[in-house]
Image (cartoon, rainbow, N blue to C red; front, side, top):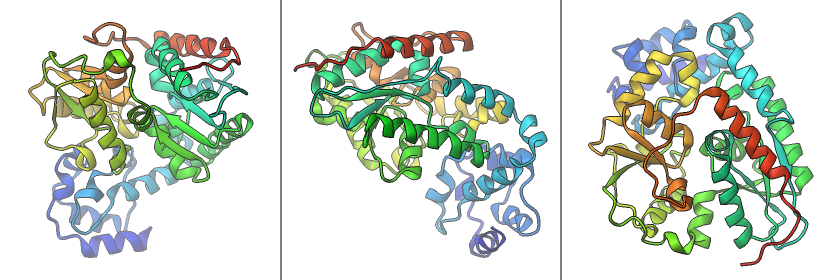
Length: 370
């Protein structure tokens, strides 16, 4: 890493493009080149490393392809070997979350033996199951009606552990996920979570990972939802940063919004140049002041009162930032007009995940027809 940092330092022209939209760099330096020079002799201090949202914006906008996220990720991985450091930045909460997420109480799989798509599995992700087990069930019921035989897995991808730098433990969780998918015979995974999408894409290239939004754009949305929202006030569309470079997902999401007739406007920083919502890199845990500052900053970059995203964590961040955060899937599958999400505490979220797991276990191995 020292060689890479030296190269970064030599190539940096100090244009400060990386600082625009990055809450962390503005908090710790006035010059990226000076910062890189410091890193040539010392690794980043822990408070700086754990304040990086690892959103990828710096590398995207830098004319020299300098990636501060790579520097800080390596530092977090090194700090993760020092348990006292991890404890200082709230790792205990992550350990509890991850152990619970992989427990039998909150995770399960359901394989179906009949149908053309028994090689596929739907993975809603932790955040969506925590938000609404009913929505998870409704989405899967619809997928089954179009893709007979598709299975479902309620499991965590291990991203929280990886974001905290504990790569050894992340590999154990990822191996468990792969084992569960293999037991299902799932070679294609359809996910509604952007973190799950990128985690599987980057760590299990032998698995075909597909976004739910791309699938829905291909098979169509429920007929009654076509053109349903044309009379609603305009909303703003926020792109999640994990799928910053997934242009197909960007296109498919916008196509879905046009299909359901939902009027929307773009943030100035969108698609591959989108800004972090404030929850990236476990920032709410490691540097909550910075996290909430970014949530308010991002939420107020639009005049729209409602902000729609296709990531549940982003949706919640926009609500915490002072706007009305809404999930695109609520518009596609809600029986009534979406107005706002009900704020839920930690206990309610875990109860929702339990209920979602329970609904999945009760599904019958039958084929649904169109």
